Length: 150
Length: 171
Image (tube, rainbow over all chains, first blue to last red; front, side):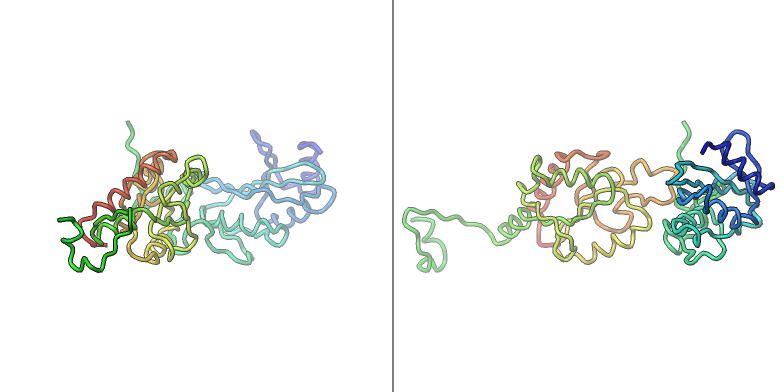
């Protein structure tokens, strides 16, 4: 199925999902994430593979990106959620896709997004006693040596 | 007077007909033994590990220098080749492995990352800046990114030279 066909199906089912200009992504409100994810996993779209969860620090907000793929139908889609820095809680998808478990731990480790109802929300790459979230734009570390600009 | 008659208890020495003998000190014999049979630890941390593996394989053959027995346990090793980038999460592990090695023990820092952090020195929060910043004494530094297997062999020969020239049994 082509991307515009998938987008048309999703928008018909969920009117508050918006297309974003300049990307293939579709922006959804975070309250409806679980509901939309359940719909996407079941036929006819049948996204059986949660490929990647990552995030982007846009300074005033954090952009959460979900990349889904359907192995049977051979089509993919990108979901985006904008989170304000005051409220970084979002529902966990680990009960729908097993791969979400580690991917959400990675996003929690590097960006500090808290996934509600996650079975084991610990740091995954950094040591467990690490302070701060390294991929945030405002992150700094006492042992960080800044490269001199020539 | 032959040399053999100057040795105390020379009567106890029986000369093999047609054979020779040599004199040495126990210390230099010990050093020769230590230097000629180094047992490295299987300890690859990043891409330098592949050069270490290549040095162990038939083309470069680290076994020619008596250091081909890579052990999987630190308790059976006497040289730790730190081959690769040391991440902060790895610090405690490296310290513990070094502490578990029996004396006498030696450390080779292989590659720029194990020397100083290398290309990860600037603007990186997760990389330790060198093996000796962990308080582990390094005997030989091998620069390169990564060093070729020949460089590792030269480093090994430098370590053997260092062991042979140790002033006393300070290790």
